[in-house]
Amino acid sequence: MEITEVRVKLISNKDDRLKAFCSITIDNEFVVRDIKVIEGTNGYFVAMPSRKMSDHCEKCGGKNHLRAKYCNNCGATLQENRARKDFKGRMKLHADIAHPINTECRKRIQEKVTVAFEEELEKSKQPGYKPVELDEPDDEVPEIVS
Image (tube, rainbow, N blue to C red; front, side, top):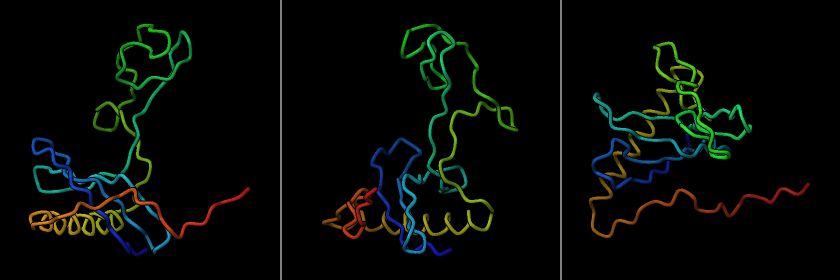
């Protein structure tokens, strides 16, 4: 597997730990979007794209995120602490959409993304800097017809 492209969109909120959103292209064939660069205590690290986990209201069956106190659909009070806990005892509120299977792959992604992030950070200090667009339409993607 080769990471053939990294796009970095810097986030301007100075007080937040989230510093950028990225997309990576693998082997010029597969794109993973919404990778986050986060400032941690030991430097920058990469967080894979994830989604909020949810469950269903016991009364109406409506879907709600796990921190919701009331059902989005019927307004019923939801039980607290509905989330499962991870091996450290913390509530599991998000699930990865895409993630590396082994340490070597995680290291390769982390290294490529953090290098690209630091390069984009330097470019952003130059006059006339134009931010990268992550959601540009791909000109060469063929339409799939069923």
